[in-house]
Length: 192
Image (tube, rainbow, N blue to C red; front, side, top):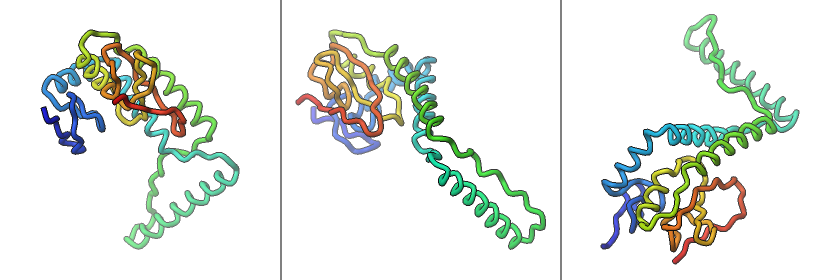
């Protein structure tokens, strides 16, 4: 009756999933999440969310100046690695490749939009249909929520954006997760 405190983020909750971080808090919620995680759609959705999250961390090259700076940084890295290896007594050290090459901003944005479109299609496919039991709708939606992407719950009640189905006055009418951009101006408002 007093609610459940999330063991992950210490948020007080009234429902089966944490409204803050999405952690399943009851045995039924854990079982539902485990079942959904085995579906190919959920696995693909998680993969896409991870790819989008990774792309958000990449600093793209958007000018010739950035390209020159990146080249100078790579040469500096090589020189420092060479000096460190010589200090250890290595004569002809092999300098490991730093990893990803710099990416053009337009190319990165196009790849990101492609992944977002695929993820949006999967979220639409897995959207919750209306059901007379609000708890069933809330639990399914929270179990389907991919981590690592900024999302809002668009309810079928008034097509408002909520932080989760827990913030909707009538979650039994169903709804879906939608992806919010980095600089979105859309208002997220939970019902009281």
